[in-house]
Length: 336
Image (cartoon, rainbow, N blue to C red):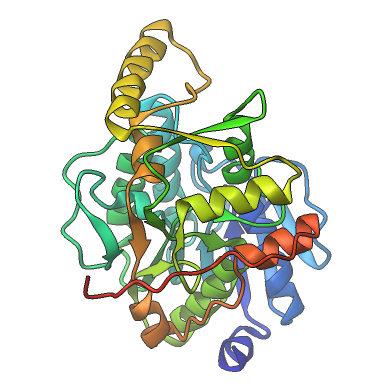
């Protein structure tokens, strides 16, 4: 990534969501290449040496005062959950994104979206960025992220990144949710475990953001890019590896997809009627994310941005838990 490093050195970059899982790691990476980083977030200042920090909740309105002069913005802020009220999701992802654009009116924006904007009811085998846009969504998270993308596209200088299933150091969502499904030492999973899924190591996503920021600043790229690890993995291999690495016996019981979909529908209806703020353990969205093939074609990011992911799940499990057995990666044809 030498060209990106040179393009970012000495540049002024703003990061929203700078206190979050992704934003903190991006800030540290930018500081390490001598970029001038200003971070924004709702929480107290994170421990990132060399970053200037201001507290700002993007849903409160544009930044007060004169617009900040920066060379590019990395918009990482968002609701890190798939359960909540439609109003909350749209306030954060849609109104919040409008406020970010208004606060930085004259510079490129790199927006972190999600692969959940693809049609949950359509096949997702090595799906590409030009897949037909979704007209139906399983929850307000995906719908509001798609709406935010439309707003970002109104700015000529934009790059939108679509990762799937982000994990890595500091993850408080993906792996914790998986382990939360353990019942008396047994994991209740959905489907049959044979489906392939793309995962995204957080530091691969940070690399993609650095490349995208550099491309935005130099004007060499714009548009939408899928971001994931180099190879998809089979679900049962992922589950077995995570359970073994975290000290659990890999005792997995699969619930048929059709049954899980029905249970998820019932639980969603009940939870919504009761006004529960915490998500049920099973929803249709989670069934679709886990039980279906969900793989991304990242060829466009490789060709245009120079994206070449080097981390994988085996690396993470080795670093975090000292587990050294490899998680086999499977090749999936992009023309399948």
